[in-house]
Image (cartoon, rainbow, N blue to C red):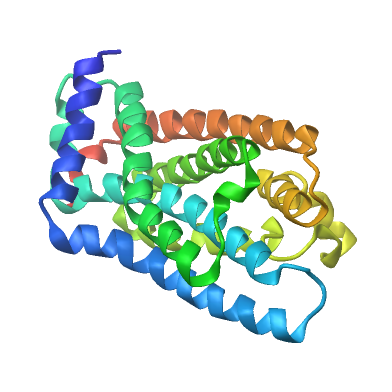
Length: 263
């Protein structure tokens, strides 16, 4: 694995972002809208509900963490789709670049796209709604690691589908996280789900991440067992995502469909 090739691949996508104002605006716009939307919804629940003592803090923090996951996954997918849309996909695989280098480059660069969009939104939430995700303390770092690994895992699964089925699969990139959101128990405890779905939900890192987030903000205690469990599950999904990506790549290479990608 060559660091120079990984750096070059990442630099290409970074130049695409920084030299395009519409791209930067798009990265910042949607997380900011999310903050405003859930901030005002949270204020409404604060007035009309006694379930949380700090409704704005709990719901808005959950929205920020979920948006971090969403941006991580979509950023990974978008950079892969950029190669298809620009008809650079064939060049990418003709060049002496390893699949592992492509995955590493996309994984590293995705965090930059995620932070460009999310940091301004997080900063806006502090003066407008008095909410800062930093109130979670040191556990926040571990929660973000678990979220990022899972987001990239979903990105790997979607890009695997793109390799297998072509650009027509790109709609799944937008739908994947919305499909998992109800089982992730982002804004409500897992007890809300039917018992059969609770079993499925516990197989996702999201449940453990957001349950721990609520535990820290509402109870004021940190259960590191939940944090470590979420990281371990995320790593398992990440490894599965890499395996499926390699399988899809070699399958597409054998069928000869890589050459037609983006045409």
